[in-house]
Each structure stands twice: as structure tokens, then as C-alpha cells.
Amino acid sequence: MSLPEIITLGCRLNAFESEVMRDHAQAAGLNDAIIVNTCTVTREAERQARQTVRKQRRLNPNAKIIVTGCAAQMDPDAFAAMPEVDHVIGNGEKMKAETFMRLGNHPQVLVNDIMSVKETAGHLIQGFDGRARAFVQVQQGCDHRCTFCIIPFARGANRSVPLGAIVEQTRTLVDAGFKEVVLTGVDICSYGDDLPGQPRLGDVARRLLNQVPALDRLRLSSLDPAAMDDGLFDLLADEPRLMPHLHLSLQAMDDMVLKRMKRRHLRDDALGVAERARKARPDVVLGADLIAGFPTETDAMFENTLSAVAEMGLTHLHVFPYSERDGTPAAKMPAVEVAVRKERAARLRDAGDKALTDAMIAAAGSKVTVLTEKEDTGRSEHFLPARITGGAEAGEIVTGNVTGLNEGVLDVQRAA
Image (cartoon, rainbow, N blue to C red; front, top):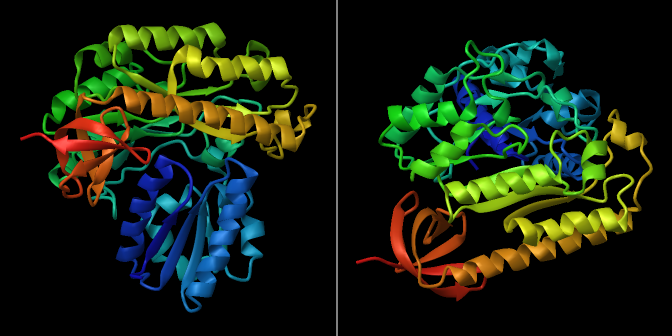
């Protein structure tokens, strides 16, 4: 293992930030460091973070272990108390080069008030270690207060990256050979609220594609159905380089549960988003984040969410059993039994697996373009897993015909 080693847990934004830290750590000469970039979205994520730290210490007894990310931001003392940990740094501090240059002169814990951070610092990364797809941060933080979510307190307030910096970063990655970029952040549909003129996400995506014509494919990370702007749907309709795959932050599809979550959309709003997306791009596929067993969720409320998988035509699901987070309003609400949460999550995942399989079966005989991620496997424009007959190089975009489905992966014959 070459050091500094970065271990990324959690979201795509963490993946981008890990590359920033890789550059900082290398510049600081931290060649004996292992940096664990943690997630705190669920209790399980925090457990995995602690498990990862212990494993890395067993495998690398002489390395310097640095813990950062959202779990470290929320509970720095708990990580500092682990004998395996040398340093704990916060989400604001991890993005600063001077943090790594002066690490030996800092106290073990360097975590400041994330709410005091008002800007997104400019970072220009050259690539992503071991990845064919690149992530570009467009936004950071969140101003909303969903009752189940601790992330705003780990990430701070909403703040947007200026368009010029987004274009420059994307151009750098394209010049380095990346053919697909994913725009990422904590709440990307709130992009521009803090900028002059309040440009929306759709405006940014269109201007980015216009100013970086060499970019082959653009994707968007999770979208809030309550805040998708008209420009996004217009872009979906007329820009083939925007991939026909939208991932919606739904969380639930029952109105009472959504109100108790303090979400800003209701069931009909989400159905309307799906209808509008398909009107703009008939072949679009939809994914969703869903929480099973939110406090007070009855069987009937859950069935409203489950039935929406088919009603909305959702094919890519990220399902989480509800996890209490200390300090959130939902943690004080009447809880659903853990066993029931797990059972409901399993039913949602089964529905999602069936929908995805049906979509892949329906793709037989169609023409697809696949971004190869490793060896001969990758993802189609609809984010379906695919294998190229005869092989392909990582990072290559291959056009071919779907000849069948094999063990959950599309078989694609490269076009002559």
C-alpha cells in the first residue's frame, strides 16, 4: 500500500474531498499517513468508521492514522479516545492545505464550528485515484432541517461554488482523460441561493456543458424533488450529454410521514416530478433514497411508499432502515420496532431489485453507451451495470448492443 492512503466512506462529496486531501497530504510529505474520511448519516456508518480505523491499525501498526469527515465533525472526542487514532480533524479543517502542513504542531483534535464556515475554498484536483468517473463539488452544506437528518450540523450552511471554479475543475478533469463527471454536493438543488443573481442548478449545468464541449457525459447526484428548477427539465429534454438518470431524495411517499420528516414535497409533488421528467426525456430512469420505518410510520403509510416504487417506475433504490440520530427531532418521536424497520427495508429493496431486473430485461436488443470502470465492466447511460464482450479499457466509452442479461449485468457486444 502506497501512503498517504485515503479511505473514503459515505457520499460522492466525500470522494471529491478525499482527492483534495490526497493532494494536501502528499504536499505535506505525510507519506506514513492513513486518512479515514468518515460518514455519519446512520449509526451503522459510524460503526463502520470505527471498524475501519481499528482494521487499518492492525494492518499498518506504524502508520499515522488521521480521522476526518462527518462522524469526526460530530463526535471528535469519541474518535480521539480510540488508541488507534493519532489525529482528528473537522470537515472545515480537512480542506485546508495548512492543516496538513502543520499537523504535528496541532493538538490531537482540530475541529472547529462548521457553522462558522461561510465559503467553499477553491480546490483544483487533477484526478481520482482508481476511478473512471470524476466528481465535481458544486455546493456544500444545507439550510434545511429534516427531522431525521444530522448532516447540516456536520456540513454547515449552504454555500455554492462559483461557476468559474466549476468550469475550471471540470476542464482539468476532462484534460486528464475523464469522460464523465458527476456534479455533487450536500443539497445541490439549493445551488445559487447564496450567489449574486441566484443562478439555479440547471443554469450551471447548461453553462458547464457549453463551456466544456469536450465533456462527453454529465450526471447529477441526489436531487430534491421540491427544488428542481425549470432549467433542469429543459436540459434533460435537449442535451443528450446529460445522462438520462435522475436520483431523487424522496425519503418516503406517504404525506403524513413526509410532513413529520419536514420534507418540502408531498406524494403528488414527487409523482409530478417523475411525469415531467419522462415528458422531457421519455427514456429517463429514476432512482430514489428511501427510509423504512420512520417514527410513527404505520403499515398503511409504508404501503404508500412501497407502491410508489412501481407507480413512479423507480429502478435504482438506496434504502435505509431508519436510524436514530441524537439531537434530531425524529429521535424523540414514537419509534417503530427495529425488526419492523428491517423487514420494511427488505421489502423495499426486493421491489427495487425486481424493478431494476425488469429494466435490464427490457434493455435487450437496444443500443447503449457504456463507460468502462474496470476491466470490461461499467455503466450504461441509464446507470445499468454492463459487461463489454471482448473487453474494454478503463475510462473508455463503448457503444454496443445489449445481447442479454447475465448474473445481473447486461452483456453488450461492441459495435463494429
